[in-house]
Image (tube, rainbow, N blue to C red):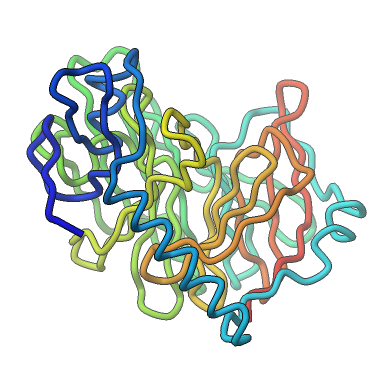
Length: 308
């Protein structure tokens, strides 16, 4: 496949679309599709068509050779018998479970946690700022994505770290405008790959294509996933992410489960019977809590997914 460059940002990364409205036809990436060609007729580029055909052949060959070891075990029955473990009156942005025995969650500017007896307590508070993504390490330390509130003059976000006692241990902030190729929106959700330590986030922005980004421990971009794109004009809206013990990345969208390999390539997809998904967290191997919006609050469900 020949090398191509996006006509909008001049990047050579992920140039998968072509605009048939523009003359001559221009090639562009998912981000520039929404910014520059949102009302145009678009198709997949020739390179993208060839890439998809090659990927399908590879995936089929692996499945036929029984090399694809990913398994979703008892998914339908687990969803049919999903158990509601907790109801909250406020919307939860993300939840994360620590082996220290607490379920951590973010609600507006408040960071809370629920113990094994179901008792809720405030753990930390970033008000008047807002909290979104959260990840709890086994030690009880947590990492939280924090964003500006409506009164701030300029958009920004930062990452804060707390120890298990609720003490702030680190915080770093950067301006979104100055880092367009890094994280140009907000860290909506955060998880960590248990095998290689990669930090994985949902990078959300209503003005551009949403994506899931895999970062190294030092913040370098390892990979980006812009969605399956069954149709050229499809919008990718990831709702929740988590990592399995096997290193697979689980992405939940409305009624769909996507599973990525460690390098960000799609390995599996399946329809599921869950709506208004807010977030997901791994409890023990193969068992997850999923929070779904319900009547102005939310319900937290148990879900069994096994990746081998």
